[in-house]
Length: 615
View (cartoon, rainbow, N blue to C red):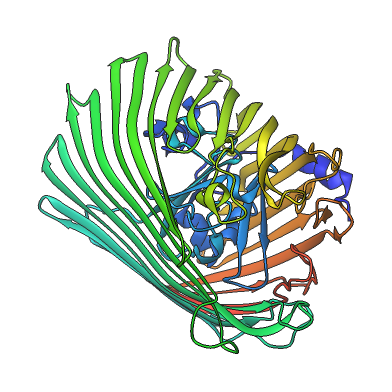
């Protein structure tokens, strides 16, 4: 299915880089672009911000349901909630998306390509998400070829605040979450938790056995202000998940209902000491970060022992300095060392990488910000690699902002690709990408309408793929992607918000034997439109329509995935100042579609719940 051209054209007239978050974007501060807090209007890179209000307004449980409505993002899932979920940015591979939770790199060292599995990322603890589209390896390192998804959990607050919700719906689905934050003296903190249980659907699209999912999760943050210029920052995130699966049982080895399941325990931690000098112009952070991921795959028909074990762990030691030399000159620099290890229960592999990076941010005249950046990584496995980036943003008195950026990205070979018995290749080179984009944003009617358009172009070389001739991993793949991202945020009346996005992504395989083919599972066209209205007496009504074009499921482009349209509607009714009732219908018209061939998707589903807030 091709998306109708008039729909794309009409969306182009109302484009913007964010969802229905905060129309006063001058106050939006992001950290993903440069690694330090920065006004979003001073970066030339494309950044989308999703805040807690948007998460609650959309009644989001699985975070990728919201991510897929943002420009440039494609989401695929191998079945129902909890099954393998990939996020692709601007047509890049899923394992070329760098994911952070509270500043900790959470990409999985125990997976083949090092990708973060978004299946277990629920909304319970999420306060804010920053999505940077395009390579950004200078402040963050390997894997940021497609872009960066930075998840930020609830931060401590000065006054006591609490929130909670519980909902129930189709497939015997129960979701509950809550959070509390506050401060006392020099200590402030926050704690959130969540629980999800669902009977799910059959992962195999022709199956009849339901494949369920369960997760317990929590996050916490503590800040201790020893002095106005000295602060200790502790963060932790934990999730324990179980997912029922379908597989390929003997003797036919054909896809079918099975009694397989997987478990995952994720633990991410951060400890940082912040010291400010020179009246706050020289900010310093020394930090330790850890990511620990344990994955097991089991089959109840084959016994109690796991059929697969994955143990991934990374430890990172960092120093970051942020020096505002004068008002027009800002220097950001960092030094870090990361140790990574992976075990499959039989073999154990490890590596280390030491990195140094720096950024110069200049604001020579009012409204203009220019950034130049460089990074060098010295890896135990593949040696040294240097990455460059530059961007500029210029805001005119007319409310027009012009943006442009050039960035290089790289992805280091994973431990599995380097050292796996029989399949590994220790001489692999890192994947590299060069990308540039340019865009314009316009604010009109007192910031009641924000429209923008961005063109991007990226070429990736030395991409690692499994070589069917040698049965090993090799640098044999090349890709190219270019396209246009458009979006919208506007408020035509009090309490009425409209948001939308359109993405055209032409992603081409440039590998030998596949030149000219579309990259698998990358639809060319995607449109998302949302509208929400809050009546004066409090009732809120809203809806979202997501239209996704055709794509192919394989590199040979012989298995087609038809396009689809998903419509969701929602409502919320306040009961006093603290309570509200809410409900939604997902996939209202019961669309039958696939994001991965032979894997099922959820049909029409109804959910309802209650929410409470105390502050």
